[in-house]
Amino acid sequence: MDARTTKDRPDGDTAQGTNEVRLVGRVSQPPEERELPSGDRVLTFRLVVDRSGDLRGSRQRVDVLDCAIWGGRVRAAARAWAAGDVVEVSGAVRRRFFRAGAAPASRYEIEVLSGRRVRRAASG
Image (cartoon, rainbow, N blue to C red; front, side):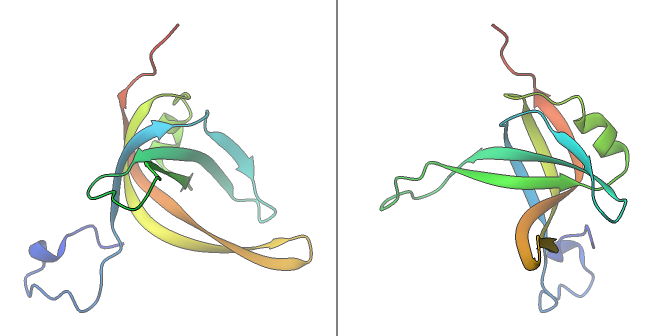
């Protein structure tokens, strides 16, 4: 992923597209690490993000987004996140293909490339 924004590109070209995501939200439950049939390990969690902007016509006030961390230091740090922690993550939207039984399936998720805890969950 090219982490530079279009304004950082010398030619200013936006025709190639950009897939960059920055989210701040609340972890809904502790991250879960699992091993896939391929042997790869992934840490997954759901992030609850308040909607912003014009909400007229919608009763939906939050979005719940599936997030995945495939490796690196961020995965080690995210293991310590808890339900209710507010975190900031950045990465990209990905579509992942897999098998659900015999049927092919896919899902969209946020591939987290960096992240940090902004605030611990309130205790008590």
